[in-house]
Image 1: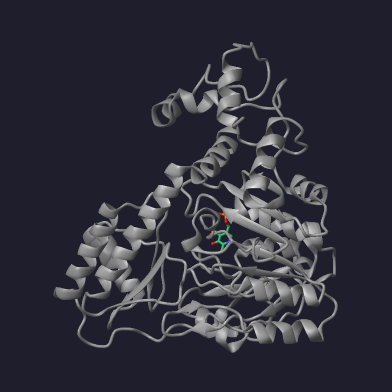
Image 2: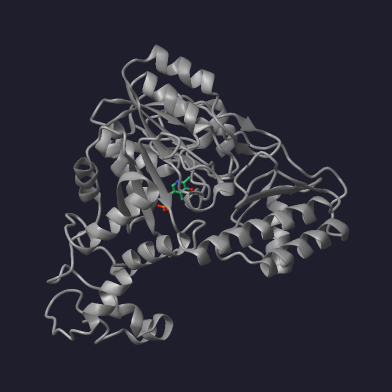
Length: 456
Ligand SMILES: Cc1ncc(COP(=O)(O)O)c(C=O)c1O
C-alpha cells in the first residue's frame, strides 16, 4: 500500500485527535497559509498516532514503503529523508567514521561534508578533482591518483565523492568502487543530482548499481519533488547494518517528520517507476537533446560536452562572462539559471522542464547572440582560481567554537581560517575552518570581502 492510500483510508475513520500537530489535520490553518497552501496540505500532516508509524524506528507503513523502495532500487535498505541529502550525507559519515578516523574526500564536495567533519571529528584527506579553467568547473578525479593515495594511506577508512558533479560530469564508479574494495575503504557517493538515473537507462548508471556502499540522492533537484525530499540507499553487499544508518539518522533528524514530505517522497518514487513517469523521462530526454542541437547551431554559443548527464546544460557565449550572460538572461528575458561563474552558465532541467520553457531559453540565447547586447571587446576575465589545494592545520572539529579574531583579508596570509568560504550555489568549499590561508585564497577573496575570521 502506498502512503497516499494509507492516509486516505485513515481519513475515513474520522478520529478525534488530541495530539500534535495542533492544527488538528487542518481544523485550524493560519489564513495566509490557507490561501497559499490550502487546507488539504494540512490534512496529510500527522504525528506518531495509533496505527501510524515512527520514522526513527519504523515497523509499520513507513517500514513497508521504505522496504518497497529498497527493493525497487536494488538496495539492502532505503531511508526517506525529510531534511535533504544534507542529512543523508552527515548520517552516512556518522555510520562509518569515528573521531580521528581518516576520510578521503574529493574537494568538489558539498558543504554538508564539512558539517559531517565537524560533527564526527574525522580527519580529512583531500583529493583535488581536475579543474577546467575554460569552463570554470571541477571535472572528475584522476582514478590512478586515487589508487595511489589509498595504497599509500592504509588508515583511510572511507572515500566520499560527488557523482555526477554539480555540472553533470560523471565518474566511472565501477572502477572507483573496485579501487575502494581493494583497499578496504567504504565508498560514499553524493548522488544528489542523479535521482533520475534509476528510472531511465539513458540518463546515467546509478552509483549503487556500480558498487558504492552508501548513496544519497535529492529527489527535489531533478525528480520533481518538494524541497528537500531525499533518499539514502545502502548497498546489499555493504557490511554496515541498516540499524547503524538508522541510529546515525536519529542523531541528527527531527522526531516529527513531515508526513506531506514523506508522502511526496513516496509518490515521486512510485510515479518515476510508473509507465507515465517513464514516458515523462523519455520526453525530457528528447526535449533537452533537441534543445542542445538547436543552440549548438547558434553563432557564438558553446555547449559543454563532457557532462554525460543531460539534465545539466552548461553553456557560454564568446566574449561574454557567465555572470554577464546570467544578468542579461534575468534582466531582459526573466530567465533565471541555476548558477553562473566567470566562464559559463548552468541550467538545471528535470521533471518540470517542458519544451516551451526550453524554447524560450533558446530564443533568448539566439537574440543575445545576434543583437547589440553582444560584447565586442574581450570581456571574459580570468577565472578566479577556486581549485586551491587545501593545507589542513587542524580538523574542522578541532577548531569548532575556538576563539578567533577578524583580520583584513590582505593581512591574513598563513593564518588559520575560522570561516567556511563557500559560494552558494554550488556550495563547494574554497576554504574550511582549520585550513591555512594561502596567497591564492587572498587573491580569490580580496575583491569579495574585507575581513576574515582567523584562529586566535
Ligand atoms: C552536490 C550536492 N550535494 C548535496 C547537496 C545537498 O542537498 P539537499 O539540498 O538535498 O540537502 C547539494 C545541494 O545543493 C548538492 O549540490
